[in-house]
Length: 476
Ligand code: ADP
Ligand code: MG
Ligand code: ZN
Image (cartoon, rainbow, N blue to C red):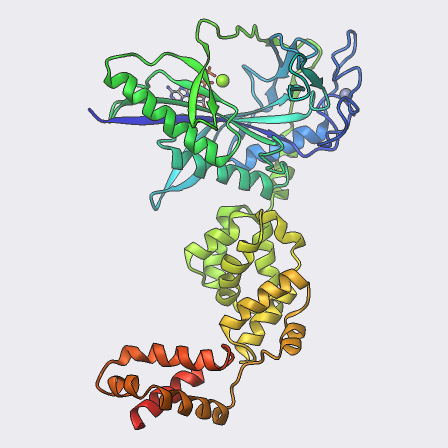
């Protein structure tokens, strides 16, 4: 029997506000532990939470960008559980009446478009963080993160394999970053993912029993964890067993998932409406204003890049996946209106140099400098091959292309006479190959071009070399 996987993702995203969701403490990452806390986020008795309007605005932006319907009335609820990172003994979240529902994102799967429905996006506060690495015997608690605003984005179980899961996550991250509500930093925990997965006989309509894999925090781990878990569940079924509903963790060193708690041990969160917070009423007029203020989103920009700049879909996809890269590209075009040439350079040399795509904003080789380099190729000053070396040098020395070319004397040789002379020598030295060329082994042209390039340290203008070689080889 063949099986298929069914996956639904729950993504938590930190919202980029200066202060926390219900108090005025800073949300800045990396501060000394417990320096960004107050009686509210420490859960002292008698204090009252007040909703940060900016948090709500960010959440609405995200919900609109994910094609969700915004509820004009939603409600905060208390999710009760006991854990040392949660000073109040409950987390303020939304349960029965979330901020938004019924959204979707479009992803590419196997070359075609597929919609992944989004069940809900709701607001909640983050918990603190336990630190275990300082001691064998003690755990430390840092409450700087307690009360940092989150949205939880819950997908419907529409994802069919681990690649789709990663594509969906990348798309979601890209959108959140485009609209400026999340920095997308998975290492710092600004974007975290719980993956729900089940398997069922191929073609079956019924859902199988799911396992939830908690906190898989990189694209690679999401892929690995899901692949492992799908294989595991299939082999349980194949050997006549039953998948049990449980929460699992991913061990990235071993590449396996293992049980954390079973359904019987599952928490009963005893959700109830938070009596300290009023129902959340959102005016349609404000939602419309926020909708108006949304920037161009990745899909729309992708289509525009294909149309306006006549780029292949492949290029447009890479260039628009990150807002910063897209902006860098368009800035280049202001200096030199050659979309495909600029795109080629960004997709290869530029992106190869960057650890993270967002780093392009502060990249030494600014759009102005990159286009200076491309212009030097186009006006015949240097060859495309030499340009790659110049580019590396631009990155390491922070110098401009023109400066490097002048300093190193690597100007291209385009002088016909000079090239003719070198070619004469090369043919002279390789009589044997020359006669084979004349006898019909035209592929040998590559060998001759190579020899001329060697003789000129790559500085000869390849176009002229090719022309002259073809002519001279016939004559000789
Ligand atoms: P729970 O009440 O257990 O949290 P939800 O209905 O809220 O379940 O769904 C949580 C996540 O699990 C959603 O992303 C949803 O798409 C996914 N999910 C639900 N059922 C299944 C299933 N049988 N297989 C895979 N994913 C599922
Ligand atoms: Mg749930
Ligand atoms: Zn606080």
